[in-house]
Length: 90
Image 1 (tube, one colour):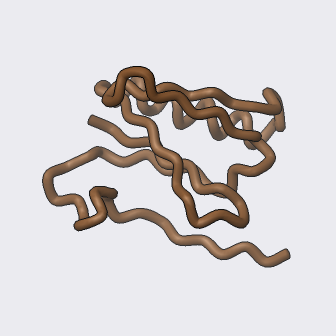
Image 2: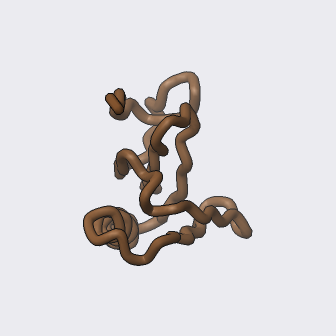
C-alpha cells in the first residue's frame, strides 16, 4: 500500500489517500505536482482505495507539499510513515 500525503499551508493537518499499486500512487503524486505547478485545476479531488468512500477536495493554491511513501509495518506510533516537515515564511 502506498500513501500520498498533502500538507496544507497554515494548517497542521495532513490529508492522505492510499493506493494499492505503486504506479497508481506515482500517478496521483504526479497529478498533484502538476496541479501545484500550473495552478490548474483550481481544486483537486482525490479518493482513497483503502477506505472506500473517502474523498478529499482541496484548493491547489493551499497545497504546501506532497509526499508519497510505501506504508510498512514499521510506521511510527501515529500510524504515519516518517515524512517531511516544512515551515512557511510569509
